[in-house]
Amino acid sequence: MSQASTFRGALQGVSSNKHGLRILWLTWKDLGHPQAGGAEVLTHEVTKRLATAGNDVTVFTSGYDGCNAQETIDGVRVIRSGTYRSSVFSAARHYYESNLGEHGFDVIVDAINTRPFNASRFARNGERVVALISQLAKEYWFYETPFPLSYIGYYFLENRWLRGYVNIPTITVSQSTRKELLELGFNKVEVIPLGINFEPLENLGEKESYPVIAYAGRINRAKRPDILVKAFRRVRERLPNSELWFIGKGPFENKLKELAGEGVKFFDDVSNSERRALLKKAWVLTNPSVREGYGLNIIEANALGVPCVAYDVPGLRDSIRDNETGLLVKASGPDPLSETLLRILTDDSLRMRLSRDALRHSREFTWDRTAEEFMTLLDKFESHSVPVLPPN
Image (cartoon, rainbow, N blue to C red; front, top):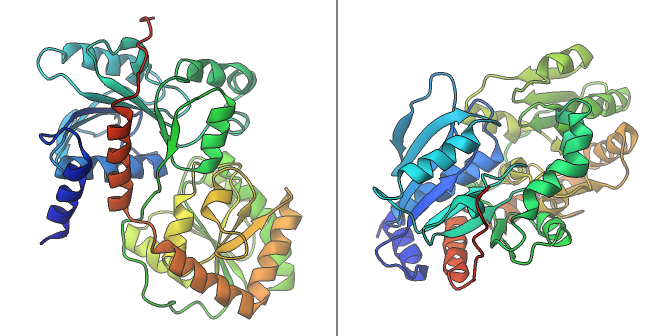
């Protein structure tokens, strides 16, 4: 039996609707978007498996330069309209209202990245509304938006936007985010695991002969790559042959190149396979972000036999098992980060133990499991009474 048919049977076994559900998934970006990240990987990997299992899945998302307004990808109908961060929200509501008679839906997944689509307000045809919240923005406001919007967003907007969802069944990807949502008054929050889309190594791969610290992901301010550059300067004073590799690109890249000094290299136009080949050679991955939903790049690095060093912040404290698959930095700033990096780079026994445990840990993460648990929760939420809020 093929993996696809096995997976189809598994999902149909947990679904109460053996003929499949009609699912509308609202998200502000899809995997093809130039600014796609981990949340978009989650959407792609789960929706294509839900479609494989016999569900009718439509993803509504924003458009971007050169995109198709409509196409089918891995069995999922993708509709693009509106612009990222702004008109995609009103466009989604218009799409829903235009398709009530022709198509209709059983479930609406409102994938909330800071701002919700407010499906809980406009859905009026008996659909189950489920929120998917990978992370809260919180400190991101101060890194990614100018004053005074940063203060308005942090102290007022985000909490106001989420207030209407406290009684909506919600799915998230980490215990950190679940805890924060419960503190905001949410009363029905469940956690699903993430996955990786390649097979972990059988054994640890060959490393570079000199110490290499890797950063893998989008380069933006909230990820704090500038703090990593400052920490690396201190590492290089102790290990002058060490290098820092930035694997990825983003809006903060040009500024970061101005800050970077000796030993810093940028790989900003590489394929997924080239990215993994580079990462596999690194001695350690570093994620200095202010917060994450979970830290998918950490699990991907673990699958390549690379442990991680990160600050002890929401999301990253979930993806790293401290002193088992990596090390958490308890204090902020470049000095504690550089000290922790030096500890793992100069202690071969520690590094090898963390690398082996990280590789072993990564084998627990599959997108099949993620989709199965997601569908199980849709079944579980079916009996949960979802209040329909009055339209705006």
